[in-house]
Amino acid sequence: MPLWGNQDTASNSTIFAPTSVKLAPNSANRDNLFGNTTANAFIDGVTVGQFGVDGNEVAANPGITHTGWVLRTAGSGGRAGRVMTEVLVAGGITTDASDDVSMPDYVILVNTQPVNTTINATSNVNNTGVIFTVAATRPAGGTISYRWQANTGSGFVNAAAGTTGNTTANLTVHANSFTTGAQFRVLLQATGAANVTSSVATLTVNT
Image 1: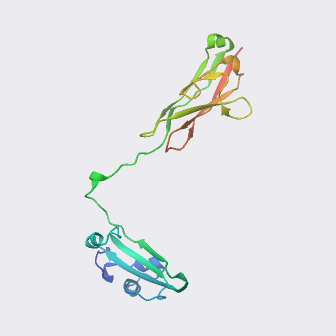
Image 2: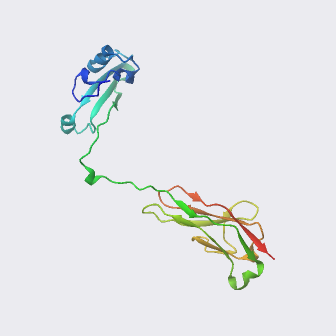
Image 3: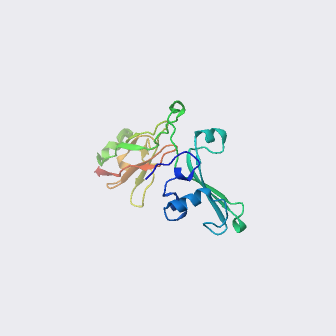
């Protein structure tokens, strides 16, 4: 199969170009597609044409922001005023790396999940308790926020009473505020990243 050329001649269009308008890939259809300026030749009420764009044409016509071949469809009759332009082959640019911008991957990665923990009921003395911890990698340029949640049998809700540090990476749970089987998890958020929820950790309280 010949390569696409950058000259405005039908011979520089591949033999498969007509398939873009659902025609058989042959030279007759290719030549007709390239030179077509008559409405209804392919589709009722539509003019379809194909043209090539080279580097000089790009410079001369700022409205064309690519190189390659273009399929132009212009409506007539009931479709009058409707124009669609499709790029069939886009050219590459290799000389402007200096102004390229690398877009960061805004993904939160949980490196350390909260784990099941056991605590004695008497450890509530002097406000001490058990700590659930999460460690996560923040997205480039982002800051992670934490929101710990607790489930005592009715579903997860934001942890509040009986906990401290519920908006940090380390949640302190006071034993006498929860019974065995209470579950904890943390919702991690960062601007531009999808929310991530940690694994569930279960608290066991020894009385």
